[in-house]
Amino acid sequence: MQNHKNKIEASDKSINDLLKDQKFFIDYFQREYRWQEKHMEALIEDLSNAFLKSYKQGDKRSDVANYQSYYLGPVVFSVADGKNSIIDGQQRITSITLLLIYLNHLQKGKDNLVNIESLIFSEKYGEKSFNMTDEDRQEVLKGLFEDEEYNIKESDDETVYNIIDRYNDIHNFFPEDLVTDALPYFIDWFIGNVILVKITAYSDENAYTIFETMNDRGMNLTATEMLKGYVLSRISNSRERSKINELWKGHIKDLHDLGSNADLDFFKAWFRAKYAVTVRPRKADSENQDYEQIGTRLHDWFKNNHIDKFELTNSVHFYSFFEKEFNYYVKAYKFIWEKSTSYDFQCPHLFYINQWGIAASLQDALLLAPLKSTDADEILIKKMDAVARFIETYTVRRSINFMKFGSSSIQYTFFNIIKSIRNLDLDDLYTELTNELHQLDQDFDAISNFRLHQQNKKFVKHLLCRITAFVDQNVGRDVTYVNYKEPKGKRFEIEHLWSNHFEGHRDEFDQEWEFSEVRNSIGALILLPNGTNQSFSSDKYEDKLPHYLKENTYAQTLHPDFYLKNPNYKNSILKSIPFKSHSQLKSDDIRERIEVVKSLCEEIWSTDYYNNKNYTDNYA
Figure 1 (cartoon, rainbow, N blue to C red):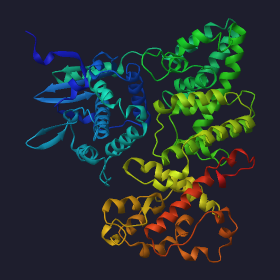
Figure 2 (spheres, one colour; figure 1 turned 180 degrees about the vertical axis):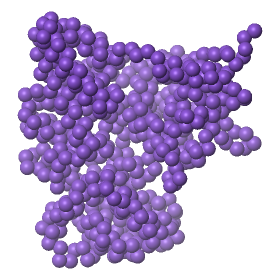
Figure 3 (cartoon, helix red, strand yellow; figure 1 turned 60 degrees about the vertical axis):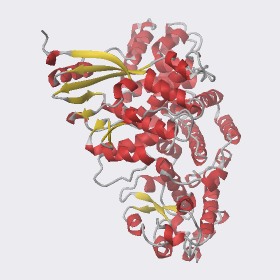
């Protein structure tokens, strides 16, 4: 008879089967939750694309059972001494739980609710506890589940920060076309058709053996290694083949220094930017096209298309193409990485879009699309900055209008823009990007209704950093966006001009929610150094105002003394902005301040950038 402890079981489980009324303990060695934005974005994109391949408007809910399934991978559990521990898969189960919490909020107030609460927590004696038993994350999960709010404490660890950030990523990336009629179908599909393989061992020893086997055995050839093998096989001259091999190895090493998957990401961006001509429509039964095949079957797609799309028909073609084009575009891709992480006044918008941009899978292809291997370095820099500015303008205008721009929501639109700017000369690129922005429905009029909430703090911080730096620069202060976003000293935090005391504003508001909306509006916010911000938090505006005169220029403009004998201000472009002092701050004053923000946004992200060849960072 087999010893029960030696048993190992494996079975496929839907999310509903895996999580319903379950309780898991997280093993000590993998307690931290470390998913990054790119992981959550990829998950949302993959799930929405898989669902939309089957969903058709007019389907019955029961039809979902026959929709295409999606495999999310294995999870490993150890069941010993009555304790069910997660050995491998905690990252995915945490992310699934966050998505379930988001979907539960999303469906509130709608018809056809799907009962998914039992997948998030279980209840005993009236007490709710979440499916993952880890005291460090219970409070943050409870806050997100109840009202999508959680205030960070100094004692919170990396896991809590990442849980909040990834939840906000779900909010930003979840596609708009799944929010309405399709929502209950998507939730049904997500909990019933998304499949994991559950591997259960009945001893910790066996569980760890499985974990090591899954993570430390065998190295299959990567897509880029298979691509390299095919390319080298097509070059018949041994000397030329050796040269491309050495060139390839050097560039792949450099790319791996950027990130473990940077080589694959580069080839996807390059081929999509320059050679993809089709993309799959977001409707049922549609097949993968160039764009998707490059992402999933890179080397096969190249083998099938190198004649028609690349015009590579013989050894000479292959050698000259990879000796010149591959070399150029790897260097361009490395330039994107360098300037995305280190501010450069010649190309500042690459840095900005690394803080607030679109999906890298779209962004990098868009940046490479207008380049030509014959472009001088100066032209490359100008093209990169022009496209990056377009991306930032697009994301800012969409964000102010409370619209999303996750990859799955905008992929079709941006793929067409990639094709429209492909290989353009600089002046033509400026014209095309200007036209695209003029066609964009969202403008800065929405500033009047824009306000801070839990899920958009990252964007509001970006917006205030851009505004604050712009105002400083235009009165001659030697600062940039980096001084506020990534300062060497104290961090800058969002400061509410009104303290959170409704009682002091009853002369203007009957309801507390009305007060909160005005208090969180963009006109009622500035940036202050951490510490200063905290010490002022409960003070009245009139008491804080004298201190603002010692801070950044944007804060100083609230004070009457700022406008006295200030030639730098009077001789600057800021004179065209409706700035005025506010000795007291009523709701009408905040509305005037909102108009200031609107004017600043229209100036900062003006399409005049594409008309003025001498546009400087003061206007960037």
